[in-house]
Structures are given as C-alpha cells and as structure tokens.
Amino acid sequence: MMRKQIVISVLAGGLFFVIAFLRPACYEAETVFFVPLTLLEKQIEQNGIGFGSPIEVDAHLELLNSQSLKSALMSRHGADFSLEISKTRNGAVQVIAQASDPKVAADIANGAVHAADSIKQRMLRQNVGMSFDVIQGRTSSLKKQEQVLREGLDSLRLEAQTDSLALVALVFRKERQYGSVVVELTKNERKLEDLKEYLYAPAPESYVISEALETPKRSGIPAWAIGLLFGLVVFIFQRAVSSGILVSKHN
Image 1 (cartoon, rainbow, N blue to C red):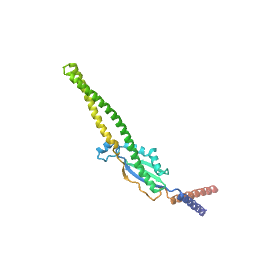
Image 2: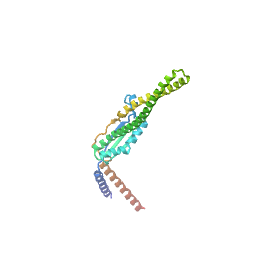
Image 3: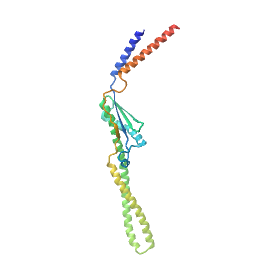
Image 4: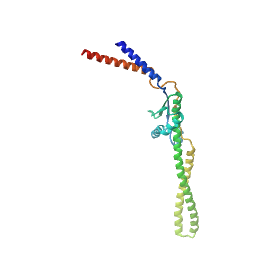
C-alpha cells in the first residue's frame, strides 16, 4: 500500500513538474525612484533636489496606473506584460514589470518611469499654456486701459491749469485709477515672462534609485518546487484517505 502511494505521488509530482516547466516563461524587472517636486520654481528654490510631497507622490501613482501610460507601453512592447505599482515605506515608488522576455520586462519597467514623466510634462505645459493665454489676454486689456487713461489724463492736466477745483479732483481720481492699472499691468507682464520660461522649460524628472536590469531568472515558483509540493499533497491525501478507510473497517 505504502509503495503504491509513493509511486502515485511521484508520478503526480512529475506530471505537475512537467506542466509547470512547460508554462509560458515570465521574467520580472524592478525599478525604484523618488518623485520630484512638480513645480519648477519650487525645485529651483530647493537647489534642484526637492522631493515631491505625499500628495504629489499619490498623483504620480495615478499617472503610472493610468490608461494613457499603459497604452503608450502597449504600443511599443505589445500587450503581453503586467505592471505592479506601489509606494515604499520611505516614500519612494516601486515599479515591477513582468513579461515573457527579460529585456522587455526591464524596458517596460524603465519605460513606465519615463512615460509618467512625459505625461506629467505634457499636462504641466498644457496648464501653463492656459494660464499664459489668460494672463496675456488680461495684459492686452490693461495696456489698452493704460493708454486710454494716460491720454485722458494728459488732456485733463491741461484743462486743470485753469485752477478749477472740480478738474483737479477729477485728475486726482484718474491718477489713482491710472496708477492701479499700471501696477496690475506690471505684475501681469512679469507673470507672463515667468510663464513663458515655464512653458518651454523641462519638467523635473524622477530620481531613479535603482534602474530595472535584465535578469535571466524566471519569476514565480520554480517548476521543481511545484512538482515537489503537489507530490507531497497527493501523498498526504492518499495517507488520509487510507487511514480513514482503515478506521471505518475497524469500526
């Protein structure tokens, strides 16, 4: 009885070993990086070494899990891969890629980091571009107001030379209005210059701690371990069944 159970267990283990050995190959590659500050001006304030806040890290995780990023990777590497995105305890981001080829797995993991940076840069430039258009429109309007007020003030000052108190009071009000417009116009022009720089400046890139490398080792449980495990399971099951039968016969 024991010998028969051992033979069946060995055969079952061998069968599962063959099945596991013939399963499609799956290779794993991993990269870890820190998310940088999103705004370039904040990055400059911290001498180019600022790390993103928890909110910025969470937003970056959303980008990595977005359909846009997956579509970009699929167009380059095909659909036969999987991505696992997670945040480490120290605030870094871990990307694990699985594919049927070790080089493809490494390329996908590293490509996901670059693709997320690229998507973020496009979004930032789009937002900056919209702000630039709004500020530019307001600046054009202020320039027209400034010109109209300046021409009106020049005329009023000439008329006010007649010592008319009413005209002097009107000139005073117009000068205050003109001064407010000039101040706002100056601020908007400076803002436009800043936005113009941000519009063409590259967004801060992720700080890669460990780049994904090609590895020849398959991921997952080895075939021999699967065969051994199932062989033991079959053997234990047989022993349990035979013990139950013996007990029932004895009773």
